[in-house]
Length: 292
Image 1: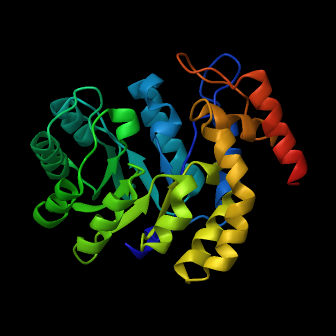
Image 2 (image 1 turned 60 degrees about the vertical axis):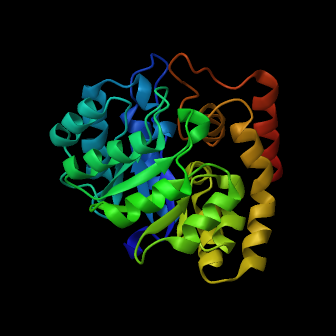
């Protein structure tokens, strides 16, 4: 599990201008991220626009990612859903043999109770051939998973190794960190809070920003792990305007604009997502020009 201490990247899914998956660009992006020094890659997360990918595309992306990474860093596969039975079938049928772990977002839209969340993840963990990382992101799912539920899962359910905590609730994060069992990983899911959450004791970040700034972001997190917060703050201060631009309108439209301007991907998304508005895209260009 020490392999997941540091920076993981919730990688985007590049599309070409016809909105097909652009595997050439995906290969370039994976190489860029690994060369930047990140600890691991997360594919098929929310940032990968998974709601608009077919099962066939998802399987092809998994296989291509493993081929491109070639065991140089661990690969985590996003496997979430709001139909527990359907998700259990996917966990049994998708090619997960080479994955290090599975990242599973809480059910969206249904708004289950805390007991419903517990029972959902209990079945997910029992069905998964790989260790499960919980993913609490109430801004997208419509339901927060409380610290009590997270800790109950951590203590009572086998095959759950950690959580990506993206509630933005610092008190909740600190409660999980205070009471977590030994070996239970806690990763930030909020780039703009990562520095402060690392200071509270988190083990790392699953980052959007590290798609475009893998070296700077992973260096910052390693400084945090070494308790060198003054150096970490210098890097974070430079990245803060980028975080704001990335999430101003939509993720992954923001990071895709950055990656497009860096020559790594086409600025293409699938509806209902659209590229950044013209003014915000110009601000992205200005940021990159200023921070060459």
